[in-house]
Image (cartoon, rainbow, N blue to C red):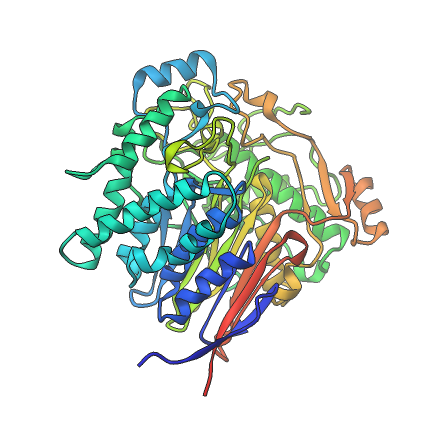
Amino acid sequence: MMQHRNISPIGWQAASKQGVVAAGAAAAVAAGIAILEQEGNAADAAVATILALNVTDHGACSIGGEVPVLIFDAQQQEVKSLSGQGSAPLSPQAIDWYMSNGIPNYDMKMAPVPSVVDLCITMLQRYGTKTFAEIIAPTLALLDAGQAAWHPNLAITLRRMVEEEALTSGNREARLQAACDRFYGRNAQRNDIAEELEAFYIQQGGFLRREDLAAHKTLIEEPVAVDYRGYTVYKCGPWTQGPYLCQALRLLEGFDLKRMGNFSAEYVHVVTEAIKLAMADRDAYYGDPAFVDVPLARLLSDAYTDLRRPLIDRQQASLAARPGDPYGMQPLKGSGVFRPGVGGTTTCVVADRWGNMVAATPSANVYHAGGSGTTGISYGNRLRSLNTTPGHPNCIQPGKRPRITLTPTLVLKNGRPVLAISVAGGDLQDQAALTLLLDFIEFDMAPAAAVVAPRFATDHHQDSFDPNPMREQTFLQPGSLTISAQIDQGVRDDLARRGHHVVAKEGPIAVPVMLYADQATGVYYAAGDPATGRHAAGLDESL
């Protein structure tokens, strides 16, 4: 018999032993909570939340966009990465065009294959318990009540998938696959969604075709992981920027951050300098590992970390981009280059009463310049996270995933999940995630305190959304340091004396949500920064 539960009010923080959701808009959180209330698990609730976010947070994410996921499977006791990222067109002629003309902005040619639907279906098949019809019901309710011109078209598209699921015989997984295949044009009888998508791509002058849709597959991959102060931190692979957070943590292991004190000038300086070094390697070496050999083992090794750590001058801010040489095991690849010199993303973290945990970062940088066609599926710009630099690990190729900024985080302690973090904010994402991790690990801050605590970030890196083949020209602001105005003026003055170009910011820096599992009490605590429109809610059993 299903237990009756009360749903806590949807605010910016929540606590529960039964399950919690933290994400963007309140209605999307409610969608995930409703699935938990119906005995769905964290995977089910995460998919319901992600799909609803594509309506409530549209502009920051879209079903035509992307959503990388990290999930802890309590039954298998393992973390996996799900690559909810679409790729470049398969056509060699399309790639030749990009190499000759560049990757445009505000044009269908910047859109990758839509990946959200396949990600959601794959997640339900592998980890969930619910049908597509059950999961999509809250999203359809939002669309039916909506006013935007694309709402009824998207509702029709999603109901076609529900119809396909109902028409198909076999088990739950087979029915889910049928719904997915109708969207991607892999159905033997009905491919209307894919046909309409292709017609829209052609009308808008894009290169994507049904072959690209049909070939798309959500890869389930081993995550990247490092140990830090007794915690194991998991990130998606180098098709995201995530591993650089692991590199930064390895560098910071050599410093007594707790003794420095949170928000002290010394602490902010050392963390910022570690971020600069790690991001320089991101910009030089990361790309889709299905196409390039990213030297992650070397980048995360003790030997390489020990070579790089002395580059952090405790008193002076670096003004150069300084990638290392993990192949020759040298601290610097060259002399460093720097030149003076976006978009939308939302957030989702979920946990359930069985111990499953999900962190996801839905996005799309949504554009409606040409509408969304008859399907209601808008498109994004993520191909601009590739470049046209011959020989670069992130250079566009047929079927290649862009190296994206989207970067969820999971953390385990003693083999059990303890933290899930999702941040919106482009190149700010892992900078904010790092400060949240350190707030928790070094300074014992709970999510409700960490998400509203001061943050800081630097633009001392290449712009992940600028495909300019002259990569040094994409470098944003050498030595920059944006810091919360809440941090003491004396600290900011000290940082300026160390050579940082300090700018105080009154509003929030990046857009975080955070989930903590208290292993001693079994209580989940979730929170999202209220200044950024984040929401959280939880379940509690009633008598």
